[in-house]
Image (tube, rainbow, N blue to C red):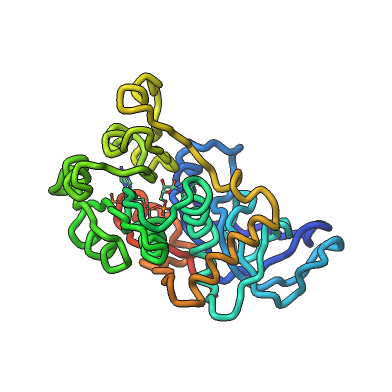
Length: 310
Ligand code: NDP
């Protein structure tokens, strides 16, 4: 990864030019850098950022120069101080949500929105399992679960991370450095296990997650922090109790500008009403993006990580 100066052309008719204030880092950026999710080289990195609209293309009618905006699903290349983005990927940020918060919630917060409100619509009395509860997506999930009245059992790899997730609303957190996940889930649910597991860890927790599910429970495998899940024999779903599995993406859940705005509004409302604190655990300069990747990829971060721009 290296920092390069490039000339940014005027925005195309359907684009806005954004003077960026903060960039959100996501584990998906690591998949793109390593080639797990391939893109033609050379390419920029990042999908999530916030800033001020500097100019708009001829066909853009809903945004104006000076608007405070954010996005979480742009074409790859958000690690930049100035860039053009398709206007239908951009939403206005309400007062009361800072640039840093917006840059940390457009991908991560909307992910929790669809996981909890669309993929498996939580009703408010469930006990669920959510891996990596102290991470960027994880700390939002803990607080959202609490707001819904859901008992979220988190996992985390150190006592400090476990305590952080608890402080942010997790009902219980399994410290994977010293506790067995399946045994502890059985204990906490008095043998019933859980109706849904949200698993962004992937390879190393696949079997464990299936073993935590009730018969006909739903495995939501939404990420690969430990590596991708491969070579699955579907018979395992029968053997473990007629389980369901989904491998969801954010893009499929917010396919239109309207759907994205509605999901973003739900997250913004939680922030402005004080129910959701967007925890920025680490800040790096744009020029230090490689150090930020190193920290995120080696389990050295908690909450969200942002690249700050002046
Ligand atoms: P996190 O901040 O949660 O960082 C990843 C965490 O995963 C680590 O902190 C670590 O927590 C845990 N982990 C477990 N095993 C490993 C490993 N071998 N290497 C590195 N980390 C590991 O990242 P994000 O919040 O950005 O993303 C969380 C997950 O959500 C990712 O898998 C990401 O791909 C996925 N995601 C999926 C989306 C979708 O729509 N499908 C959208 C957005 C995110 P600990 O040390 O406590 O175990």
